[in-house]
Image 1 (cartoon, rainbow, N blue to C red):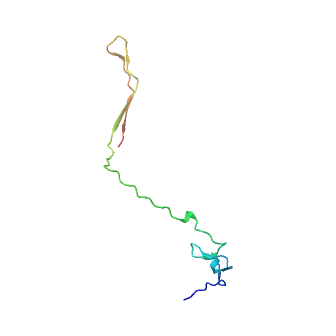
Image 2 (image 1 turned 90 degrees about the horizontal axis):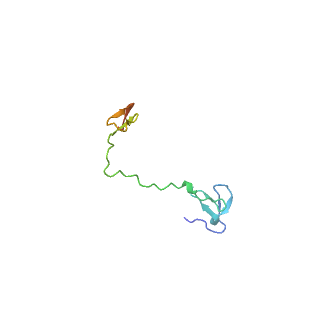
Image 3 (image 1 turned 180 degrees about the horizontal axis):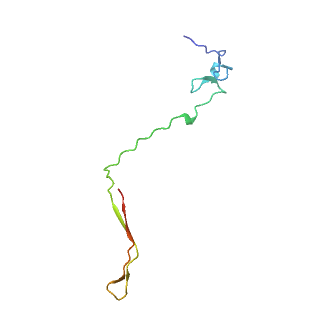
Length: 100
């Protein structure tokens, strides 16, 4: 089947309905045939981003080990200058923190 390609071949724009010469018409990314002054390229935001690789597993993983932490809260021991034993001992309490 032969198509018109003469200088007198005209087409109707799918966007505006105006008549243009077929050689001046362009096909958009949507498939619409429009005049050269109505042509719009595909916007870059419409291109899907390239998907990167998925994260890989860690080599030789180790599970978390439960650890206990002891913190002593209280008054420090006061030593007399010439005595072998402490003069006063103070202790308020202890705090235990578990990381399990």
